[in-house]
Length: 335
Image (cartoon, rainbow, N blue to C red; front, side, top):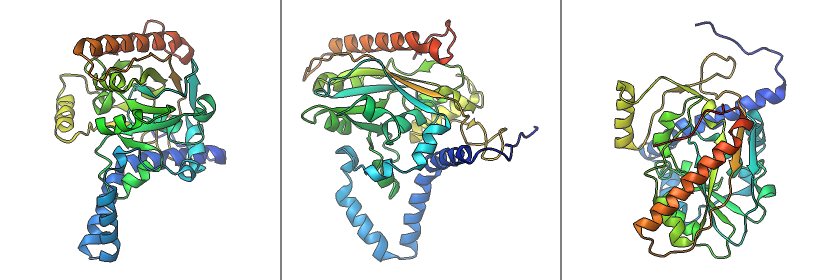
């Protein structure tokens, strides 16, 4: 394989953007294991004056990811996230105003491999979120796999990330006064195995828990489609029925981790590596679906609202796909 190296005369700003994205990718791939490793080493070498206070504090702080988290504005404002946003670049597009007197669930699609669109738009202060949705606070709900990790959990919460558990979503949606948005990547880890350039496959047909929570709390539903999310990486071919997909599905069922075998470019060359391709991301926020509070929704009510959500999601995709390079004949595939 011929390696295509990056030219030496690349502007400093673009180099900083690449480094910003690279460190973000590594943090989500390796930081969980590194943080667990640090804690183990502290215990093995008996640095009790470090690990005992932290573990004691962790015991009393264990429920925080399910109680709205603990964000820090100064962390969300680090300059590195401006470079991160500008690398792709990431854009947030509003199609309709939202009433800050209500709480909302943003259903984010697709999952992609690492979901930089969700992070860049809803976890940093360099997106247009506050300008487009004044008076709102967003909470990005993430896999519970990350949140037991010492130190890493605190890092995640500092950006406004919280658990994707039912208790956590209910906590956000039950806040009085409105103005709260639960952002949920509905396809979950399984959908990342479908994240290939040109694919439009979403795992949504069996995802109905968010609909029940919307009905229970009277939270309005908003479909969100992030165009470009699946274009950032290639994956080793893993069609359904292949031995690779069977292994990935087995690992996912056992650990909750999908292990997509993805690749793109590197820091100093364009031929292979973990840095995503420099492709624009356009995250389009659709029209809100009004939801009347129903404390004990029936299966029929849940199914009806779920069908309405899928119809609105398909409309959102079809209305905007031509603007962002999706061929007219492409349609969403719901699984």
